[in-house]
Amino acid sequence: MKQKNTIWLLPVLAVMIITSWSCEKNFNDLNQNTNKPTAVPPYLLVTGILNKMVDFPTGDQDHWNQYFLINYDYYGNNRYDFGSGSSYYTELKNVTKMEDQAKAIGLPNVNPYKAMANFFKAYYFTKMSLEMGNIPMTAALQGSNNLTPEYDSQKKVFQQSFQWLDSANNDLGILVAAGTNTLGGDIYFGGDLLKWQKTVNAFRLRLLINLSKKSGDADLNIASQFSSIINNPAKYPLFQSSDDNLQYTYSHPTNDYPETPANFGFNALRENCSGTYIGLLTSLKDPRVFLTADPATALVASGKSPTDFSAFVGADPGEDLGKMYAKTNAGQYSLISRYRYYNTYTGEPTVIVGYPELCFNIAEAINRGWITSGPKGNAETYYKLGMQASMASYNIPAAGSMPVYFLRPGASLGTFDTYTVNVDFNNYYNQPSVAYINGATGLTQILKQKYLALFRHSGLEAYFQFRRTGVPAFTTGAGTGNSGRIALRFQYPSNEITTNTANYQTALKNQFNSNDDINGVMWLLQ
Image 1 (cartoon, rainbow, N blue to C red):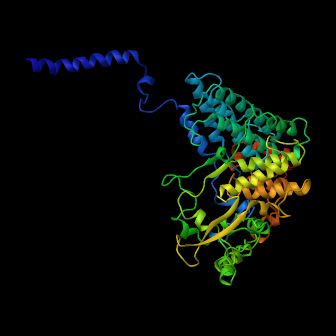
Image 2 (image 1 turned 135 degrees about the vertical axis):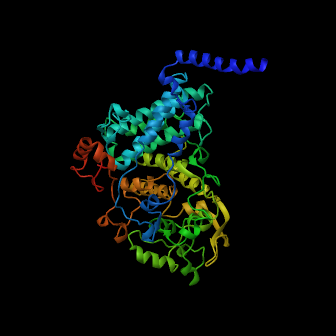
Image 3 (image 1 turned 45 degrees about the horizontal axis):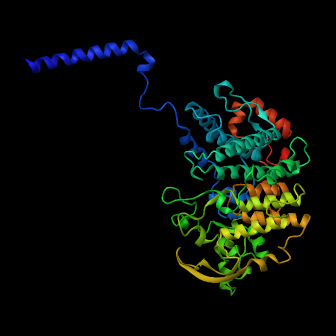
């Protein structure tokens, strides 16, 4: 009897529970998937946003910066026939969501996620604008409320970005003073908000330098903005060394460097060094060439020492690919260092915003008369600091000897010949071509050294510098296409043509005579 009563009571109880529950829940409640999250914690969004900040050192950007070149047309080319620029609106939507979620969980108005949201907005919007010109900003990110956002002028994009960066700095300063380090998901600094504050200000100086042609614009006050940051380090802290760099560090097997032992055989002879980069290094007798490139094997075979600067030769970026490929296979051109870039799975960290660049930007600002000096000294001081920091990143000693490793000709990866090179920074610096000279010559020196320091780092900054200043001289020819011109901008994404047609056409009319012209001169270059 006890067993029989249990069997009949359970279904009755189940019916009572279901009846009671269904009376209290509506249809939508019943159809909610309780296994699917309805909100994302802000720290989970941070990681994805941060991952998209890095420009990995491979492919077209290295070619467009004229650092090294592809010589086999099946895998690409060195042409400046630019297509669409980068779109970061997905990341910016996540930035908005991150900011909203921080508010939803009850964080105060001044919080790390809001501060970082302001930085991210400035970073991604200006990055797109530097590539294309005017872009949707004010009316963007509204979803179905506005599917056809108007374009903001490039000037307005930068003005708004400077405001965001100032707000980010102010909020981060408050949080740092309060001892707050709660930025979850931070893959770069582990939540260290002081380092983020330094990054915000270093990035702002980068943007100001990119607007050097607009230094006379009273609305922007470029020199005044630069001076306010440099002369108030308590409010606007900056990088003090390369230890403060914003950089992406690789780990094996989850996040490998673009060149690894696994793809060495695939890429071994299909890319070679550019004469723009190698020629500048060898003309300055710069020891970095021994660490970033291998000597041309044909020249070594003919009797040149592998540690002779003349043994390093880069190809003209304008050379026809067929000829470049044949010469590379004949050992007439230097290849990128096999030891530094292919011998491990982790290579070197990729710098996004770094201390050497900061030093050169300050040196340039002093040279241009925007400021008279910085906390560490005059233009020459910052010029030297930038060089020394760059060389230190390759473990080049200030004075003494260092080992260098070149792949043995015909040997498999891992078989390197070792040589010793003597270096002395003072001797290097005292060369007439290197020692700083005031005025226009000094500006060219600063820009050349900045170009060398940016090798394989910071995305298109080297190209942006050439586009702005013409330093160093980029070469063109059959291999670079575009009728012998270096393109000045990227085109707008193709979906703008089909989904935002009227505003797209207005943007072109306002900037480039109604043509989406890769040779059009955007506002900041005028």
